[in-house]
Amino acid sequence: MPRPGKNSYSDQKPPYSYISLTAMAIQSSVEKMLPLSDIYKFIMDRFPYYRENTQRWQNSLRHNLSFNDCFIKIPRRPDQPGKGSFWALHPDCGDMFENGSFLRRRKRFKVHRADLLASKSPQMIHYFHHQHQQAKLGLSPPEAAAVAAGMGRFQSYNLNGSQSSGFKHPFAIENIIGRDYKGMMAGGLPLASVMHHLGYPVSGQLGNVVSSVWPHVGMMDSMGTVPMSPDYGPFGVPVKAICHPPPQTMPAVPVPIKPTPSLPPLTLNPPQICSAVSTSAASLLEQNPAATPSVVKGSALHSVLVHS
DNA sequence: AAGTGTTTAGACCGGT
DNA sequence: ACCGGTCTAAACACTT
Image (cartoon, rainbow, N blue to C red; front, side, top):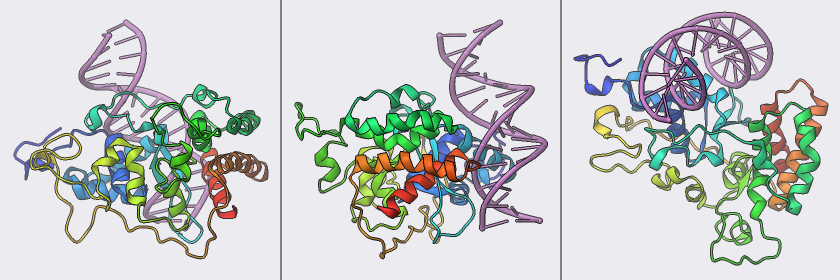
């Protein structure tokens, strides 16, 4: 509850859910993924309300990360020691909020297994082979979806090289192998972002890549910062009322993860990557039955990209 | 030990 | 009343 008269108006509780706050934090980052500690930092930087009672709201936030399908966990690279994983938004939750406003969720984001079966494209065949195995391995729908998200995204990958309408699907061949990599996904993330995370050199267009996929991201500029209108912030409410600008010495965006230049360029095409991720997840589980599905999910993607 | 991640449970609120 | 979404608390396991 707001505390009238206490300090400034900006000390009031922001009208955002934890899901919204977390989504803001993640989307404000260059990599579109953040470790938990940076999500905390983002929220506390911007919303003074959350500088108190940290234990309470941080517990809630962690609960939301685990509970909601719209958040997916990305394991750290071995050369990036630290606690916890990176958290990202599921690519399909871009329209989760009404009119791009974080004030109101359009609907609860839920990954449907049926969505994974929607395609009969050749690229999905491999996935079909492994789907029952993933189920057997205990992958929940969101987890299996995250592993296979790239595969699902390639449903419209056009092997014939033609598309009747003028619409260029983000995953049309032109966009996948074309000059701007728009919309390319892997393991539930923009592939460019994942590649960058895993240390592959990614062109300077990376900052703009995801904008075409996640509408809200379009509100960010290429530096991952948020353009402010005089009256309303990017999240649909007056900025002045509830939001403190981030300290100038402390940029809102986390320090970008440095690419590892020694890694070779990718040799797999997108369907191969997705297929390999699925295969890798299964074999990882065989080797380590105790591994949690979310760990397997991220590790599979990691190993595929690193070893391709 | 502290931080992180997962899960369960209960309460509250708004919409239908 | 029921349901879905959200918030809070708590317990537990795991990792660094």
